[in-house]
Length: 456
Ligand code: CS2
Image (cartoon, rainbow, N blue to C red; front, top):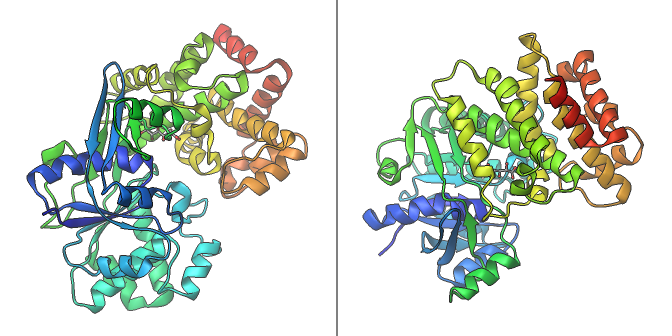
């Protein structure tokens, strides 16, 4: 009988295509590690998972197309089922509590620390026994372990942030300290929060995929798709009794930082660049944007001349890694929408592009090229706001207000949740962004890209 050893918050498409695939294989050799799927804010996916007894289709859309059935989930918790989650977190069989709640789900401020003014954190601190946020849930669950004299479980952050484990650790400890200093100290001493790097291109599921899966003979309302490539690197600090993750191809590494940074800056940085520039030009998918020669050449050059220098020295072969990533972007089978990547820009740009920009400035390197995707994001915000189209972003109301008011460059630079004070006050950076934005507004992004190529 399959047991439950992992609790996962946020069983969206990425978790079900990536982590659940590794765990599905792990279960074949060790049945203790089934996943409890927790989605307390929206019930659709967990209800469907429950209805399908945890089974759903993973479509690998790449040079070869394959369909597999995964069955890694054993328990299901939707809205109103928080008591069951709390009881499960007390079960000593639960060793890992992982999360994919997206960058915004951790309620961090622009400096990467817990934002005590975030409405969810204000609300959780007022009623800590019934949390909304992942930070509140981890503190509650760890507090119950401490009271029961049980060892801590291991929180495992699987979202695209630099030092994601360390950030989550600081957030949970800071939160707990407001409630009980003894608990904060206990968490600091007893719980490990590994950093991790997760990678596999996973588009949001749409009707096309559902139809395709139905044609294969599966009646499945929650299929997921991804490319063939998948990687997961976890900091090698898991306590005794953890699952044998290496046996299913998960890499355990002493320092995950080099992987995290390379992946966030090269893959995700290039993705966001393709998304904002590509959407302004009129493309829909990543593969389509990569087929646009000036745009593809711009992104290659951005990686080679601006992003890689921000990562050196590195133990990784960054040239090879970049070439592989650009090949993955050309995958025509996956239909990865630029609009999906453009979501939550205010949360994504800091790790992907603003960190390398700040480092380039500190090292005296030019930021002209790196400023182009930032300007493209600003024009994207402006365009949506002026057309009255909703922006998918936790700062959407503020972005729309700035975007409606004319040239958004200075208004957006003033957002401390996005741009650190020092960068926003840096004239050289500001002027590079303003220049790129003005050029693109006047002659369109393609003209700027072509000019950039001619000057190179
Ligand atoms: C993408 C990522 O949507 C986005 O912002 O850049 O989801 C990307 O596909 C994954 O991180 C790849 O591992």
